[in-house]
Structures are given as structure tokens and as C-alpha cells.
Length: 89
Image (cartoon, rainbow, N blue to C red; front, side, top):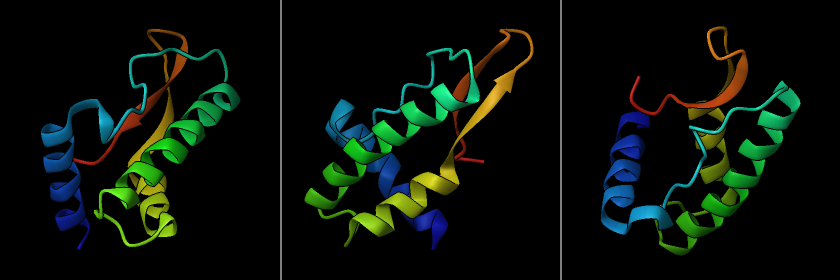
């Protein structure tokens, strides 16, 4: 089921451009807290769009997918936190 949802999200992102998913994966954050706040704000906007597009039946269903697939991780080389997309892992 997760693969199906991932495929739908990928197709939707390609079809609707920046409307579908807007998690800022290229923005460095000084702390994990800053990263988590940015990820939560992005998820809030994206989940509402995806429900409105009919991709998910509820905001909760969309949110659980974001929680699993978008995580804040520390990059030692950049010495910063980034939102990392794990949808296609």
C-alpha cells in the first residue's frame, strides 16, 4: 500500500508541479527543532492540498505518510539539519 501511495504522490507532484509537495529539502537548519518546525509547516500545507485533490481521504491519512517519508536528518559535512525525502527508499 505504501508503494501505491508513493507512486500516486510522485505522479501528482509531476502532474501538478509545486502544488503537490513543497517540503524544502535544500534548506539548511541550525537545529533539529528548526528543521522539525519547517517540516511540520510544509506537511500542514501539503496535506490540505492533497486532500483537496482527492489523493488522500483525510488529513490524518496524508499526515501519516508525511511522518513516515519526510524526516529531519543531520548532515555532518554541511553541519546542518535538512528535511530528507524518503518516499523512494
